[in-house]
Length: 335
Image 1 (spheres, rainbow, N blue to C red):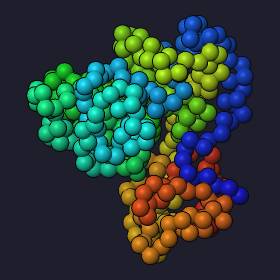
Image 2: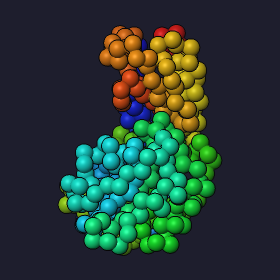
Image 3: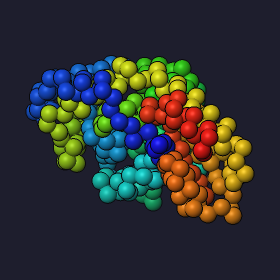
Image 4: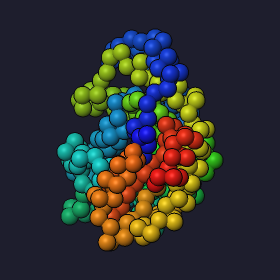
């Protein structure tokens, strides 16, 4: 048996999702006439209370498009030190938009309003203008932790008071919404733009959406074209996204429960020094110094369990819709 816990991006489309994709009515999205893409974009925009949305191949692209539209070099994007846009997007902010980073050392990827205020640049030629604040929810490198709505509300209100747009990297946003029983509308009202990924816990094979005002999305569509993200009969992919949103959101609770069960299993293992708090579907744990990381991973792999290293002595496991009762039973005996 293979139990793939490397990421929730490894999910395979179900038979029902494939049927929805196969039966999709499609057009040419670059020409603006793919009805299934239009349906998905309108669905997501309305759910988050935004005027419009744009379907893109990946969450990295939606984040990078948002940064490009919101900023104007020279400028600076403020985010946490663990943020995906800083750690895992290939230096895209500098390469694509010629802007720099201001990093905050927060708590597992989350910072406070007080920390943010301390990092806003003065209007001084020595400093690039602070042009965008970016949050990640849930935070991948923080172990799937989510932002408290009270802190989001304070940060968003402050950003509006100083006329700095605020973007949300919502790679696992639905995990955060489910974990704290928050609505899409409540989350959406605090952000100028949101990147929403469909290909992680929601189980679609590919795709993310960027939401915002009509004017913002009009500009974003131009940047998507420049970045090479224009797709043609992408309604087949959009159909998978619609299916995911209609069928796979509530079941994220199962992933969260399974992650906690795995955490309990790991807590008895002598080779593990620390397990991060488990808030959603990501388990991060630290091996004792005398344990060789690669040998440990190879040992898991020999038993059919695939895991991912994400730092010095740090292992990541991620639950998803392909981890069911059979896989959980196997993990209990073999992890």
